[in-house]
Length: 148
Image 1 (cartoon, rainbow, N blue to C red):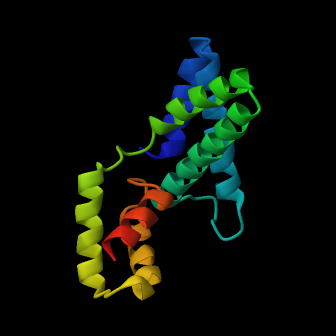
Image 2: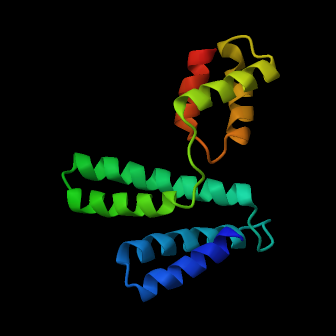
Image 3: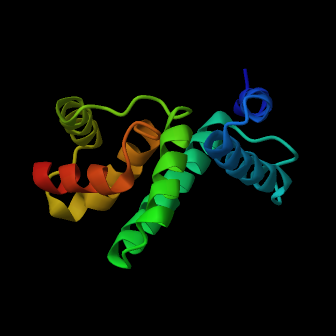
């Protein structure tokens, strides 16, 4: 079932249940998907890989906002963002454990033939494609640096 269909069904359920945080989060996801569908070159369709990127972007935006709100002692706003992150993360695949991530990146390094830090760009490109939705870019980058 496409993500958009799932989101619409869950949004309807959340509205009937009067679950304010879920409604707020699901509307944000729906808006992002609609923007992606209407973007130039998408022809009204969003591939599954793009859907994962959209969800990751929404989570990252909220985590950045949480950090800013906590620095400004606005815990009320940070709590709302945390609620949204929890709802959005339900639609992302389970993240890899640190050990699984290291194994996957080691295999990518071996496959690409990378020898040292100069080959980081090549490894990052492959890793980001293969591990999309399973780990964020910052974590992947840190593990690649460690292993090269």
